[in-house]
Length: 220
Image (tube, rainbow, N blue to C red; front, side):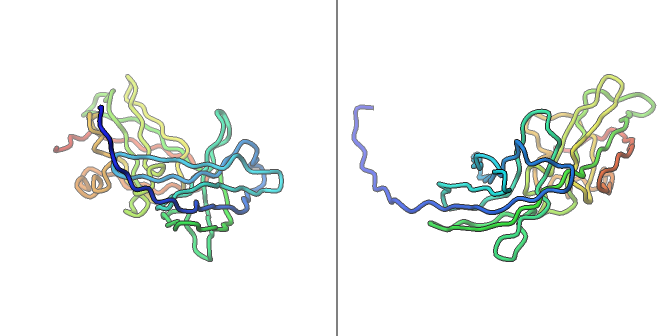
């Protein structure tokens, strides 16, 4: 307060990501928006296209340089979709981040899918239902854990029941743990530190499966 500050500001040309979007028969592009997300320590930014036009094209302008992840957003109540492929310069970035340099113009072909799976079941503590626990579904792949959308959580109800929907097909680890204030189960190394209490799960496209779990205590 009541002081002067000298700041040197460097102005660069913003980047742009554009391209085409395809979806399988039965999945409408109406209301879908291709988004780019970036996650730094304590910082989250989202940039999104205005919407996919009738010809299936999208464009995201005024992008700063940095590392980004492709995602898709949709209106409330719309069918769940995810980015299955994101081909840019011959490389698929659907499950990895990519780097935008100053002034880059990147053209990408994005393919959406909606063949997500569902997992549900009951968690028990001995012979009794275990309410109030957190059920965590984490990708086995450490690379996929870097994408926050791939880690899903839910709580158990008074009967110990849980349900996780919208799961992208793949290999996962499933945990039933007590809630924690720091949400430590989102840490990338959480599955490695607690492999002894993990339930291995394979989620196939458009499937629903029942998996019952036992409650586990987690060492801090």
